[in-house]
Length: 66
Image (cartoon, rainbow, N blue to C red; front, side, top):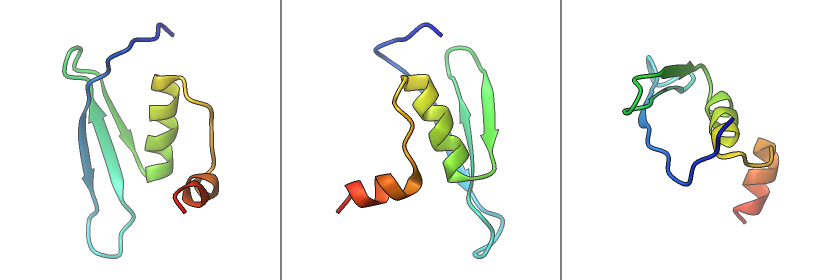
């Protein structure tokens, strides 16, 4: 994967009702490429891969916020 110092995405986040899980979709405005995700964790894994970030768990991120 070729790394870049600039990324742009159109991000959509929604859920069907107040109890449904969050879903996400991203679109590259330059290429029109679209990806959909059935959980925030899937979206985060995609973003990590795009930015070549080391993988972390949800728990690790939550602990880092405190």
